[in-house]
Image (cartoon, rainbow, N blue to C red; front, side, top):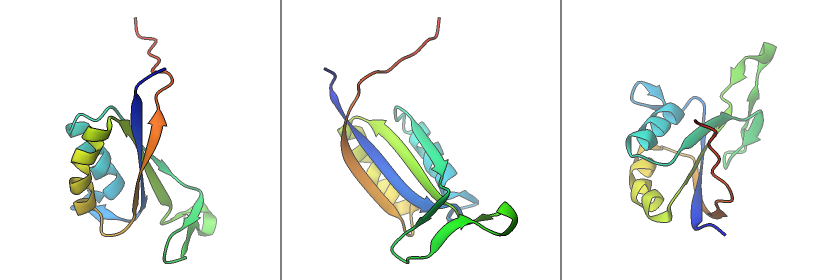
Length: 110
């Protein structure tokens, strides 16, 4: 059995910006700077939020403001400490903090 961790999920749109860069990139950069264990931003194929506007690939496969999910796993105290900064960066979106269990942390480095 391993120690419990938390899973932080953030849902933003591809077109969301923070200063001069995409919001998802700015969030991942901030999390790295704050020494989180790791973060991944993934583009969704299709999705909708509270506005019920569907975000998906548009005409000719060109992105039409795809949904982006940012996933972070770390200790609860570290994640809670960074939440105010993340909230400040977002104009809209969704942030979830979920219980998780670290089953394996595999590294094949020699």
